[in-house]
Length: 387
Image 1: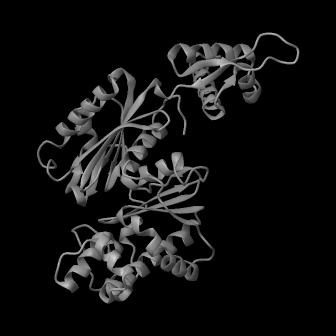
Image 2: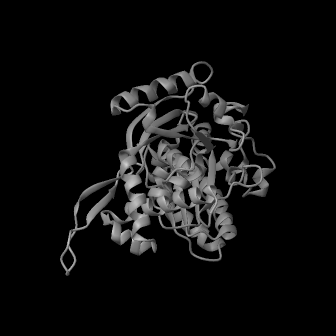
Image 3: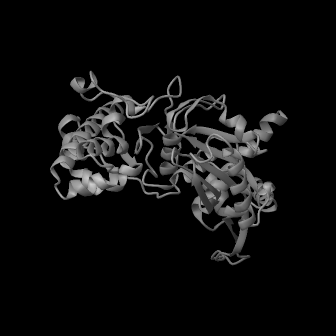
């Protein structure tokens, strides 16, 4: 056997053993060998390596067999063996976190994006990460790498952001910028793509392999998972649901809320709802206030929100008809009003789709982007952790 093949087989079996320990809680070497159909000497040798490197720990003894003999030593996963940095570049805030191997965000910080966008954005990111490392009492040796989400079309191979209107980025070398502050492996992707990875790993999408995640905030974007893998498209722009046209008449005369935004997000995003109602009332109204007025049956708020919800539901209906997902997850600011919009959305979707589809709000709060960024790193990097 060639040494390369032997090395590959060894690493593959280490991954299998580590997955077995992670999923099984406390397990013994004998149980691992039986479950994975590996020889006991092979398991024992690989477990010794994993113990020495700190991936797993001994946690006491299990019960002896009915024939007596030594009690087996149980093994458990060590999520603090290493950490990862997650970055969520938002148009309003940049969210940062350091998470362990279980996806627990051990330290979290955020700061306003626009205040630093054109001057010291990456310097401030480095400062916050350094503070978090000090809080956790860890150094660079304990950090595997960095995952980052960008609100725009992102080439994951070159690390260049083709277009991110909320950040005013065009052909922007974000990976190169991050390499300037972190001497670590770095993976980047669209922000809704990382969110669907996070939900699949630790959220409401756990155990489901066909998912659509739709983020409704300043704009509208989506991430698509097919058979457990992200569907990015040939130009990394799959999932741009904000460009879907749901009303031919209004499409002839629509004007983007922001430059570079598509039809659907210009009539159904949180910012468009707030802007349209503000124009009608002659005073500034946020999306949150618009939904509060909607609940109070304020006539103009009802007209604006109903029109937005109808188009949003039609866009989602088109999506589920094409992809037949197990679950549609709604995220972003408007998802906070899910209890208000659910009934109308479901009525429209049931009318225009070939089946009944489950729609749920995201299970994460402000840490969603950080968890997704960490999930991206684990999904794309060649570590012993598989998600």
